Image (cartoon, rainbow, N blue to C red):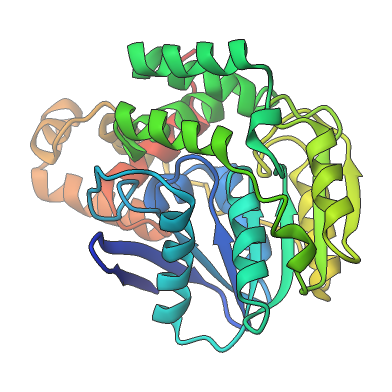
Length: 337
């Protein structure tokens, strides 16, 4: 299901639901794009697995992805109001929260402020104090690179966030980060991530909490995962092997297994449809090049109507709604570098 949550003074916040069951709301990391993220096979596989037995809710924060444009200040208050708007739009009396990366401290703060709504809390790859991510010089360098060159900056952060990704996935992640927001928004959100400090709120979290952190996470130090778990009453800490910061990259199966165990859900087999006919693969490749149907038809020596029909069957086969998703999927599965 697609939906829009209205945030006063900001506009519409796009969200999507997948699966059936109690609500599991994902509080996203730095940047997101509901459609293009879903088109990257590893990300879709990860969220599909979490959605089995739950109504998984993903959203794009203001100014990102499919949500309305926003050029105002980036604050914790805006992040918290966004979660509230999505939960209100669902009409849910209680929810489970899964916050990863920058979304982890946001989810922890929201859970502390809404103890009667959050039934369970999962925090992955997060931090209690953003200023503990690297040193001041490294933070300044990353922000400077992002501000000077969005392309170079997104390449840099993809290599930090997803060092274990294959070439196609890395290229797709980089592309969808650039499509998810402007350079200015990316810089402002990363600065907010460094500024967040939820240490005062953590002792007030009442929901049963699972903290997951990879031991060699290259973006968020393990000590910060331990800090979250140590300050939240009764929290469980599970240290996982790996260095990728994004939960869907690297040993994603281990992340899924721990989350489902904590939520009381059985293990599942994950699968994303990917097989296309040879002709459909040709059409998908040309869509990824940015060609319209008319030019695809000319290139392949078929009618424009036939090109449209092939594209429609591709979208149905892969469960996509847009050309952009087809392009993102093709890039992820057919790397050019």
